[in-house]
Image 1 (cartoon, rainbow, N blue to C red):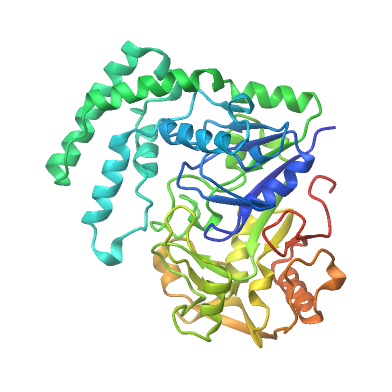
Image 2: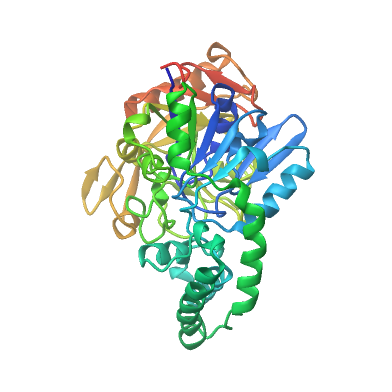
Length: 436
């Protein structure tokens, strides 16, 4: 009988989902991307090769695995084709193994132009930290029912008519409101038509395909992008991404029923990070050498895969994780980057917040309330031994085991997997998601 697993980030993204998806793909025949766009950055380390993926699902580096891009993804086809070319130049066959939903809304050059112009116009404390890749404006067009979708590409006259109308609207905003340059219609149209011919063989009814493989007994792995605390509905709004990053979106964003989602694996770092603006209750100073935040930043190589920006770092936040676990219905957790904490004499865990004189045990809704939260910490002893590359629970230092057990107790969810390094085999397995 088929078993399907959903992998979601439970913090502010960058939790190490790519490596875990690649590792789990050993037990899956298909990997599905169901939300976001090329603002996602998944880094895979396989032997001496490093792959940085934005749109192509992380399962692509496993031979014989079919990868799917669902209707919940906003798609910059030109970027996707460049990513495919790069992977194929490195010896990975992609085009014959990748299927793209015709329902994906397109990201076109005017979306990124608006994205960048808006962010440039904001005051420093109001900047969201967008990647400027047009993700938000593309989702806006989808909700406003003016989006061009993949299926429009194969009807040139219809595409041209829709493009003229929507581009007139966006160029008015760009020039008259944001003071930016207009986007040229002919350039957009010509590039889209050229890309359409290359993408055509990959387009397929993803919903029907997933039902077929599931009925045939094949396991599916659903790969989330970003993290729960960046979810457009449940995150620290407005400092969030433009899509739903939670496990439930795996159904809506790929065209299957929620009954086909059997196990939810929540990925979380052994500490916390965040890229861009927005509140971060357990944040630490990262530029003062010798401080815990500096070690997290440097040893954890905390720089955005897509943006290259420094990630903000902080202590593990069990209060925020509790919220994520409930929203996603997490079955089990995977802790990543435990080795980054090696050598710290003491570790703090945020167990709750003080908010307007009261103690709360769940991350509040919206940035305004989260901004006012003061963390309440519990201190545990650290460990001096290295945990890097360990493969068995019993090899972990006693204090590292105690740290993980305390996290389990605080969030009332089992830790089923621990990642101790970027390589596939640098993983401690306690319960396998495809076997639970």
